[in-house]
Length: 106
Ligand SMILES: [Zn+2]
Image 1 (cartoon, protein in one colour):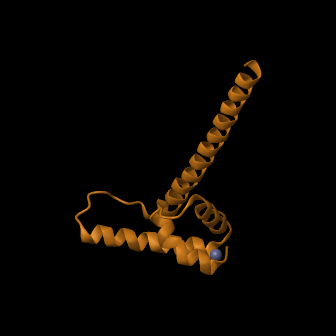
Image 2 (cartoon, helix red, strand yellow):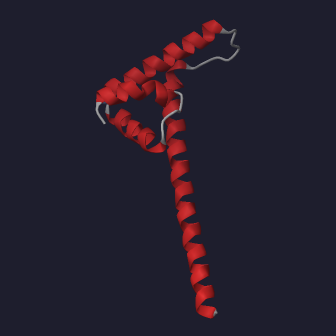
Image 3 (cartoon, helix red, strand yellow):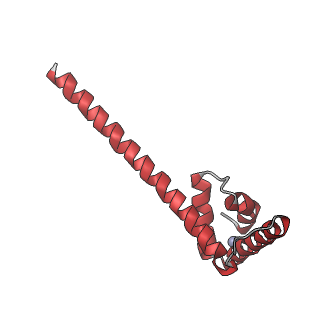
């Protein structure tokens, strides 16, 4: 993924509108690219400031943790989907095994 592609997808990344594959690519790119990380931070802060001004938010945001928290949340989502995929595969294999055993028996 290039910086340009990354920048174009940052808002979708923040709003969690990307598929797992793209989210993973974004995470990998941002991890190794200080420019895009900074861009992510800036967009998060702007979004936060807008939210704080548009409604009377009681919530206190810790601006320093915005980007790390978001990256952590996205990472967890990617891992979750990988785990689900893995379980799906194991379950599929088990069903095939049971079917095969039934076929052999009868
Ligand atoms: Zn970049």
